[in-house]
Length: 312
Image 1 (tube, one colour):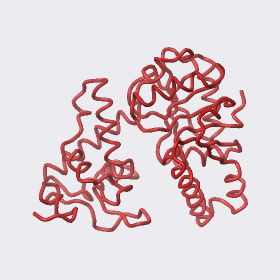
Image 2 (cartoon, one colour):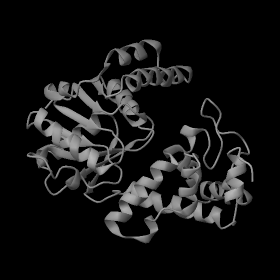
Image 3 (cartoon, rainbow, N blue to C red):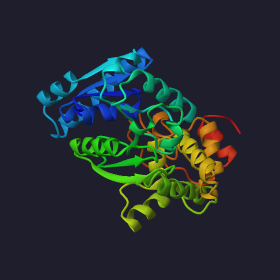
């Protein structure tokens, strides 16, 4: 089956990244979202990201034009009736994914491959309401999708050999390394990464060290490119809370109970990079402000209140 036309459901950050790498591989991409504004912003952000690559000599202007010409948008989900390959990239809410996949099951040919980019939910649970669950597979692209080289290819009990082989070829076509995983909430990367972030947050909350020192200890000591708290900001603290709750609900393991400080920060509107403030502060261009990392004195209720512009 050819993947010359790939449909992506969801025009958020991950959908944008997927559109870039698929268009760069030479395939046509159709981004589908119910929000006209999201679709417009998506194209603007993709164009801006590609301009950054041009400035870094990682792309030419003509290559950008070719990529953008392969990306189109639609608000009409029924367009997927012509699809051979669909990737879902909507938020990590099980019920919403189940409804979407049940709808795709009716709209698409039984031969169409339906992939979920879920980081924490079970593929079998997502596809349980479908007539043809054998054509559903997990393709977990790490963020940012254009930069990371690994894709977790997640097979459920129902996933057919045909679906698996097509998905593996698709990932290789994108010049990514496929990592085969049997269905498990969190797969490999998310399941290992979340407890580390959770524990780093607890270390900060227990007044053991500053954000910068926690991240530098892990970067220098263990060769990580990004420290756990900076990583949490990049992913989004609200997303971290949802992901940990999803895996805790499935596994019951206490390491996935969200740290209290995470919940406090999300309630205060500190979502990380996308809100301009998380464990660090960020300027309007998304660059981290030097010396802005939280310190132990900042993490109490009064400290967070002051950081958010409130009064004690």
